Length: 181
Image 1 (spheres, one colour):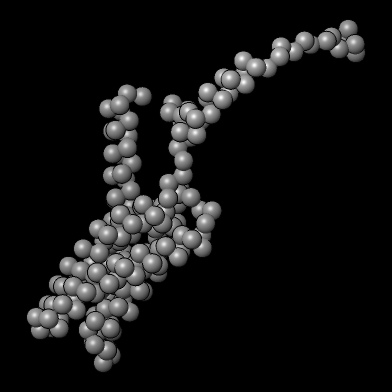
Image 2 (spheres, rainbow, N blue to C red; image 1 turned 180 degrees about the vertical axis):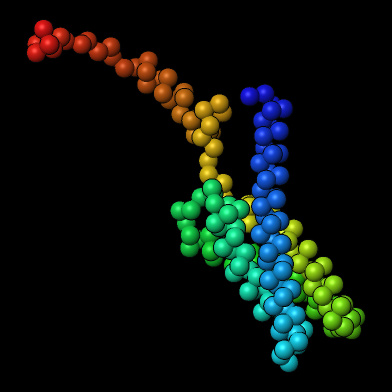
């Protein structure tokens, strides 16, 4: 495959990944905003506390979507590690997301329902960039590429050793099988 063709294939894969990530993220956004507004209007929770709870409900929803749809073809061997990293990076994203809302609410006293939703969505947008990078880099790791057109680095490293061993092997003589004769 040419260098240009390989680049095109990688960009196509990335575009599909971004689209799937965005679809799961959109569902998570809807869950997040719905739970946030439900908590905000039916309870006496403060704005940021309602937002934190809504964020974690959306995180659980997103994990299912990411694991079983967006990144279903990725490495599944270390589920405990995967879930731990997912929760760690999700918590960091939650701090980013809710930090924006906290700053708007308590720093600038922008606390109307419309302002709260605008800054909640702004925080989600900023946190989404961080989450996309961290999930694809650290949480849902790609399996090694085993396409025959491009050997893996392990295969490339093994080639000199294989050639060396082939040169050192004594030639084997095959004796006729008495049963077949």
